[in-house]
Image (cartoon, rainbow, N blue to C red; front, side, top):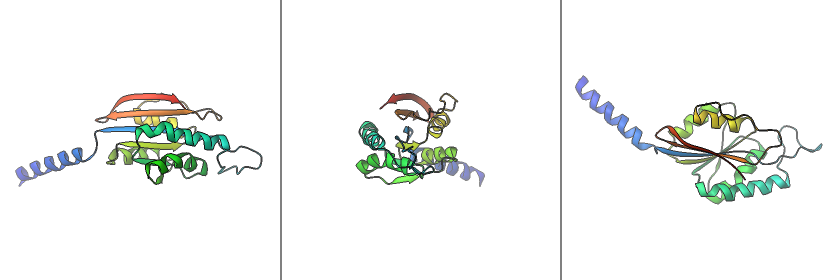
Length: 167
């Protein structure tokens, strides 16, 4: 009985490894400029006009990565930053919990999708990059710093490249 079980287990493991892409690309970005005026919602502010322009710029810059999935936290500023690229790609913006970044990584790694856009915040975006690369390399962004994109590429579960670009 044990001799038959081992080949079956090996076959299942082999198929599960082949079922998921071995190469993954993660495009990580903080939301665009938010309204910090005296009349703005303090908890869930909208994007400013500059923020809406930056979201359109992100859609142009990040489209070359052809994300198959778009993730955002459940705030207007992050959803509205992700929306232009999601619309261009015909994708729905998936909501994730910024307090559960490891869980998000596990979901993306187990997914059959190869390329992702993830919109987060000044602290969660660098933290997500750090989780993906397995080291504490990136510090939180300044409160008024909006123009950075992290591109993390993995191959066979190992970091192939990490690039931080301005947009």
